[in-house]
Each structure stands twice: as C-alpha cells, then as structure tokens.
Image (tube, rainbow, N blue to C red; front, side):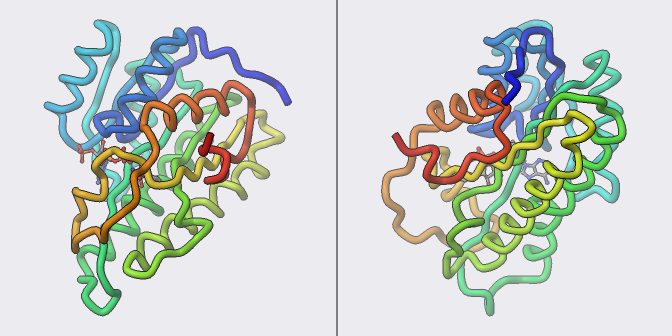
Length: 230
Ligand SMILES: NC(=O)c1ccc[n+]([C@@H]2O[C@H](COP(=O)([O-])OP(=O)(O)OC[C@H]3O[C@@H](n4cnc5c(N)ncnc54)[C@H](OP(=O)(O)O)[C@@H]3O)[C@@H](O)[C@H]2O)c1
C-alpha cells in the first residue's frame, strides 16, 4: 500500500467548523498541508481558520444547494489546486420514522448523501491523484432503530464511497470510507429532529480525527468501526 506525504497537500475539509472537521483540519495543518475549511456558518469558519493559522482559507456553502460541487472550483481557486477532500459534514435526527417530517428527510438525504456525492463527483473531475474521504459512521454497519433515515443515508454514502474507491483506483485517487463509532462531539445533542436516547460514553474526537488522518497517510480505503477502538 502506497503512503501519502501530506506536506504541501491542498486539502478541503467539508464541515471544517464541526468538532471532527476542525480536528481533522488541525491534523492536516500540523502535518504541513494547506487547508481550506467549508461549512454553513461563515463566522464559525472564520474563527476556526483564524485559530488554525494565517494562511488557512475558508468558504461557506450548503450541501443542500442544487450544485454544492461549486465548492470544488472555489477550493481550487483559493488553494491554488486540490489534492484532497475530507467530508466531515453531517446532520442527525432521532425518533420513530412515523414522526419524521418530509423536510427533515430531505435534509438528511441532501446533507449526508446526495450533497457529498455531488461534491465528490466535482472533485473527481478536477483531481488526477490525491484522496477523497467520507466520514460515514458505525450506523452504516449496524442500523439503529429510532435513526432509520440517518442509518440508511449513511449506509448509502458508505457503499457509494467504497464503490468510488474501486472506480477511481485506476486514476490514482485514494477513496476512504471511515465509519467511526459514537464520538463525544456533541452531535447527538444537536439533532435536526427528535431527542437522542441515552448513549454510552463515546470515543475521544481527537483520537478519531488522528486515526482518519493516519489512514489517509497509510493509503487505506476503509476504516471500519472496530478499527477506531483501542
Ligand atoms: N459524532 C459522532 O458520534 C459521529 C459518529 C460517526 C460519524 N459521524 C459523522 O462525522 C461527521 C462530523 O460529525 P461531528 O460529530 O463533528 O458533527 P458536528 O460537530 O455537528 O459537525 C457537523 C458539520 O457539518 C456541517 N454542516 C451541517 N449541515 C450542513 C450543510 N447543510 N451544508 C454544509 N455543511 C453542513 C456543520 O456546519 P454548520 O455548523 O455551519 O452547519 C458542521 O461543520 C458527520 O458526518 C457525522 O455524521 C459522527
């Protein structure tokens, strides 16, 4: 398996204002990559970029847009090229399917599945090598009642990511499906609908982010949930 040297690599982090995204950005930055953050809130992104380093760039965008792939052209413009895209954006909803509204269902699909696929499609047009990463999640391996739609869209993204890994292998693009278990980022406390059930203590987000970056460096194509536990 070929290893990837991250020094000087131009890396776009979707969800760069989020708890895992900001840690991933910090880890790429620490390893010498040029980093761009993208997410919805420009004030959060600006603050995060400023904390990280003076040369860190950012742009706000919404994965629910008709064509969120424009963020790829923007990253090529702001970074002066593009070597990697890490998708750490996502939303979650809890509760029985019978209570799920159409609006929330549409958002879960757009943010957690179709939006990332559109971004990855745009990236694969612009990249000749490098890496694409999706943070999918343990629910892609073990569906959870009360998280029917979230489990389904994460499983769909996981499968798409693994298929894309095969598709882009001849082009020399590494595609990684990372499926972390529950992690203490507070995501479960920010659902777009419903209330989280009591959850066991999750993993340390620093450990999860470090493991994802190590997997990119090692040229891995999958990080199963079990790969995250010590
Ligand atoms: N935490 C866990 O237990 C866990 C486990 C497995 C997998 N994951 C996955 O890991 C990823 C990161 O999760 P996290 O725990 O770090 O959550 P988080 O802190 O809530 O971060 C989520 C990020 O997604 C962005 N985002 C949300 N809606 C968006 C939209 N419509 N367009 C663009 N960006 C949007 C947010 O930006 P704004 O705040 O600006 O909206 C934020 O930067 C998610 O895909 C999640 O499903 C998490």
